[in-house]
Length: 274
Image (cartoon, rainbow, N blue to C red; front, side, top):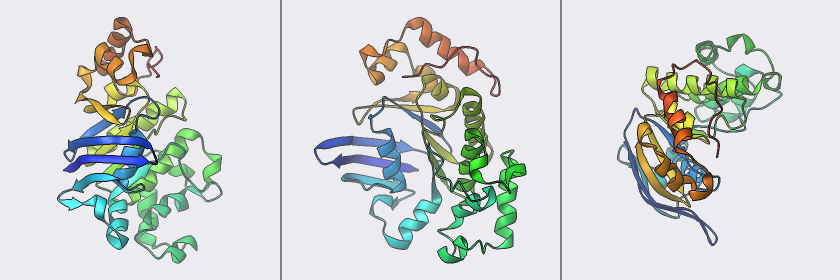
């Protein structure tokens, strides 16, 4: 169980996350939605401890994550893998080496940078790439791959850590619709097959409805919605994004129809992007 209790993050006079309290059981796939600047990325970065809390407590299975330091913090960042919008790969390194960098917390850093990886880890990286459908790209430089392929390499790097939680910060914001669907299908399949807790910051209502069991809406650093995907009505969307977002009953109903569309089928209509 991930517990976030009265967590606040300030940057000078700005409050990015304001007194947020959440409980998320293991095994859910959660989408966090809201306008840019709503506090979504800051919330995920605090969970992973890339950013410290200003107040409040973050716990996982009884361990106060927000207080960890040194080796115990590094162990937590192994158990709580992060996937980034801009992939964060090393462009000139081959794909397999980029995946292996997910093991830096578990091996000597110098040995890892010299590509002195154990054979069993290399074989595991290849298996993960095969699972994600990109094993044939293993010897290529990361910069030679498409955006969708690079993001799947980022997911493979996260899986190398064998994490208990996967945090994905706008994982499809830089991708075209086809590659965005492939990446979201991949994250959902990992959740279904592995039972991992997956939390995604997302920019579209349709994606949250289609892929997530639970949706959390943030506005001005606060939680303004927390419920099932089908509970995302037009009124709720306006509460999350503001009355000027321009949602209509017809548009929201069309979005709800995506819940019944099989995964792997591209939507004919554009997603609601706000």
